[in-house]
Image (cartoon, rainbow, N blue to C red; front, top):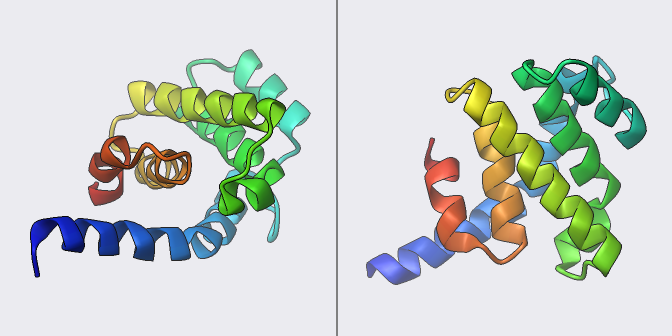
Length: 127
């Protein structure tokens, strides 16, 4: 299989796993079996503890869950696109604080891939 086709197949399979990964990641974020903290709660926690990689990760996760439907369909309105950028920044802060934060790498990779930034997604998805 040529490398370009292999790369596209890998990204397609990762997109299919998004819902599973999002559901898997949520309990670690808040202790809730189904959803992370609300976006306002996660924003406050991240603001109150800016040096906590998990608080930054939780913010990214809460935002992704908030915009999950449109994100999966690739149809973000301007407000949702701004929220996706906020989630991206939250994951990047988490990784700046803890480079080996596996869940942050996975979710940032998924977010980048779903916002048509596939080349930037690959290193995170591989980690």
